[in-house]
Length: 392
Image: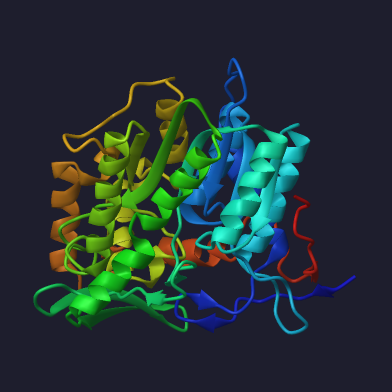
């Protein structure tokens, strides 16, 4: 037994440790929010980036609603003598346990999704266990990528394109919300190109190529890469910045795959509190304002993921825009919602920050990413941190 008393210690939105019991209970909450369907057959899915954010939500929604079998891939750190495992490690263990209780054959692989060796190993597993896949969901959020074919390491950049930008941003000082103004430097051409290499569609296409070459795509196969557009308020750092260039490449990759005869889409999800999004200047404030405006009408990642699976499986028609993207964000980008958020964005000051934006909710959501602030967990009691990775 390696029980420890775990407290949320860290800086900003990053915590040094995660709470295993909180992560497990959070997965239980998410599975309980999904209404099950009874499909004619249980689809086989490959989810790349299955341990956090929208990738986790897509995995849980697929398991709980349509009883998917398949493989989830993520890249997480095991517990050490000094630190707990990453939150994604504990969430994966809880997800695998749920899949087993539900009678599903879902394998969890801990490896670098960018590596060709990972692709080969996972496809060997798919061929051995399932014979092919019906769906591939691509949800990779990584700061860097090593191209296995050249050995080159690419680093993504959170920068503007064309001219410097400034944005309001949300921070916390010992739990107290602080309104900040952050300057955003201009990305060089090299930084833009590297960001595209990390966050664009090249690796997604390589997964499709690998599956196709091995003849592991079933009839009717479809693939979707998860993306985000967002508001004009976050545009300078997101859609119009270096990340936006990568997202544009991801969307072009979907068009290229479609031209090859693959049912390939990008899914434009709505704003949410994730470990990736909380690190982007301006996003925290924007999401806090959005939640203040919408309250319970703000759609969660699990709600959006249920909608995505319903559309992929044909339960509901695909909601496509003029560019062929699946739109799960219409609730966020409606004119009335954006107008209300814009008014709050323009009006917010340090004095009215806690009243205008839902800062307490946002702070709690960030903590929940690491297993804290989850109802029903006694954080004053030690918890077992040495949780094994699921057998694959």
